[in-house]
Image (cartoon, rainbow over the protein chains, first blue to last red):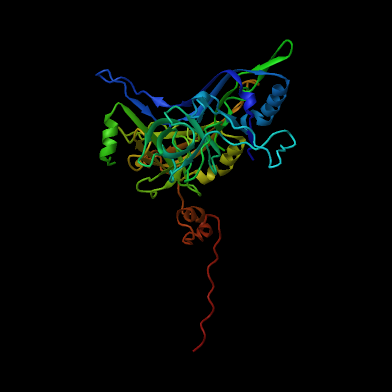
Length: 236
Length: 206
């Protein structure tokens, strides 16, 4: 059975990253009038991620090697956070500055958990209005905590079967109720019922290595490790 | 194939969004399309609206489809590449179950929001023939084994000059019409089988 391995965000701190939708477009040639028609047959495309030079200290290196081995060359899938466009997320503006995280909330007696952490919650809270069918490219969102959407933002929806999937906002229209009707790409991988809260803070997607060696790490003298992983969206 | 007005308008533009749909009458029915993820579509006149087709890389190659032209009816091959060892084993074991099954290939068109403009239009109908498996050997650690499953299908006119051999044996009759006992005793009429003359009892005296 395929396992899903959650990749900690700290592992994806790269010098550069590229997250794009891969398209399959055919150009059948130029017409006599000089027009080059294009035919797209991919149904909306799928996500590809490429990271350059993920620097590793000892802890990150240990975790990286363990996850790369657990992945078994791509047989087990990875839940990868998408940090591209992170500053572009619709963070709530508090005191003139974007609020990217709430302080951890302790218990009622001010005690934290045994590892020193408290209760956490997302900074951006939105909720779907109405049901969106399979492969829909529009979604209505009610903004509970966050800035207005402008296009270019990424969010994650955890589907029942397809699990974690990332979508990109391409167009925003405000309806009569003040909700944001967003156009998204790619089309929804599954039906989305009303009341679902998309994750804008730290969207993640089910991915797999492009090739079995796509997660390989290189080691320089003085034991400094780095890796440049290449991933593509996976379906289990 | 009748196109809707919306489909005709979409085809007139310089950018067309389309996808190929393949339906193989195995048990259970296999429905694949060339796009990513699942899609609910109506394959006219075979499937009702809302039938789900599976996508994402499971259908890699849909070849060009040709009708009978100048007396030559082509055979086409569908390719599934990068399959797992499990799929390879299933394909090897189920090859007989695929042979002779009807294959339908259709095409559907989308608007600029990737919503279907109409049903899937039937383009080609054929019969699945051979399911072949290839496993290219690994030439190194960095070049893993690539497994490919190829389904060869022909139309009803493919090989029409080479009629399929068929006999009046019980096995062939069961394949043609399951449960029909018409050819059950054909084996008793083979050359070299000695058939004794029936011996009737004397009629009762009146």
